[in-house]
Image (tube, rainbow, N blue to C red; front, side, top):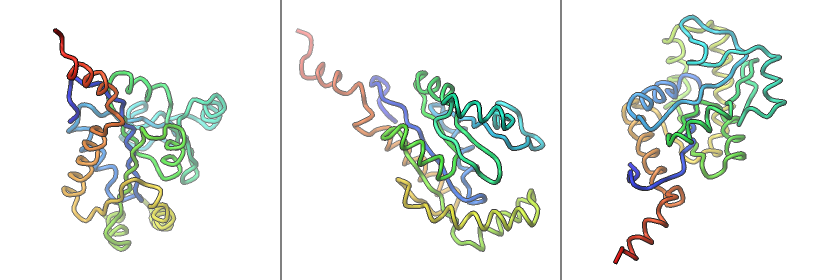
Length: 213
């Protein structure tokens, strides 16, 4: 963990994976275990699912509202996925960074690419792979939340998503959820300690080399 006396720039920490590869589980565990990390709540045009809460799981908006937000430049990134639109609102993200926390994004490769183009070196992109495609399909079926048609669509999309693996800084294979989670934790901690993010380091070194008389 970065030294508490040193100021640093916040990390925009992206997790991406095909549906069913474990991204959401790892994201939940990260948020529960790390009080320096907050979730970016996306806006979406898709319908609310049972058990979801507006403003907690997503900001649910209609297509007209979403398009207006795009036109007004209110998103850091947005994408068209599964016939619906998803976007990351700027203001809440900047508020989190201003408060001294890092921001976690659960977005796809399109969003990760846009975010990197917008925010550059503050973005850390992690892609999570399944151990195999049959294992991925089995996980989707075990969830019992999707129709056969949706599962087929997700598997088709998984191959397209995996083809963008080389647009990420880190690529992990989730064949063991505990090990994969630990690896994600290590990546986040190492990125927080990068010299380029330690904005308070120069001042600290000056004081170190020029102590008060």
